[in-house]
Picture 1 (cartoon, helix red, strand yellow):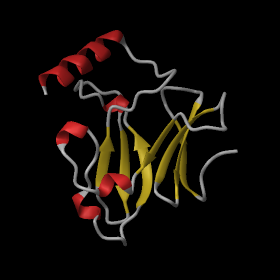
Picture 2 (cartoon, rainbow, N blue to C red):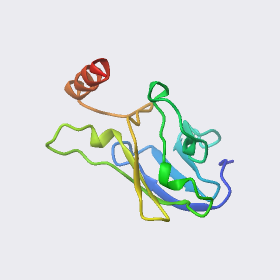
Picture 3 (cartoon, helix red, strand yellow):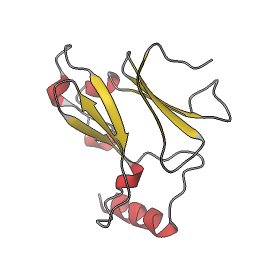
Picture 4 (cartoon, rainbow, N blue to C red):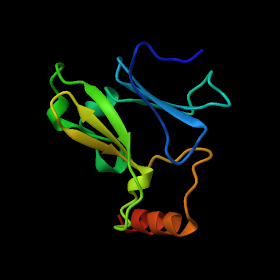
Length: 128
């Protein structure tokens, strides 16, 4: 059984015909492989990511969402572009306050990407 409460948004991942993403009303982002819908392959508790954390932990910090009134309302996967900015490995979240936040890289089993992009991602990671 899928582990969410009430669905806020749901989208298929554009680079994997087997992955379905769900944003639920408890502020969880869940990514399921349709070959195993009992357990999410990826689960992000967006509420936990609201706390200030160090950059070394490589998690999100959403300073404008410290108010309990703000919630995540929608999400969209990034698309490939000519800027080589790894957008296709990103998911963007829209808050009820109108802010947009990014989680990247979003890589999971079955994700297909060109080898050159992985090399560029590794180079970018090593330079930070």
